[in-house]
Length: 74
Image (tube, rainbow, N blue to C red; front, top):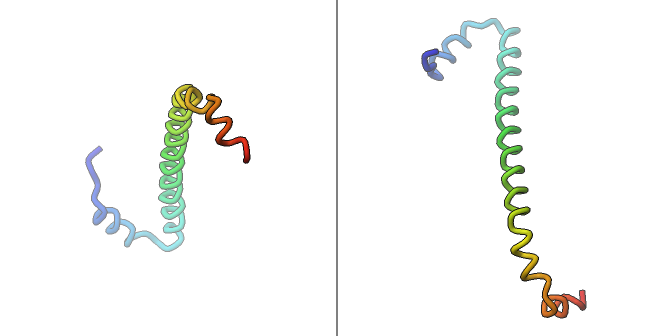
């Protein structure tokens, strides 16, 4: 499939009857939401993996008597 430009899409949109424009709008909205959801899901997965990977390293620093004493008043 060859690349399509915004101008080509716009030219075709201009020829559509108004009742078809809502279909196009819904489809474009769906594509944007789907891509956005995919990006969020990937970011959540990456953030969770980073959190889990750093937990053991942070535990060594946090699980010390000095840290317990520093935070005991809270």
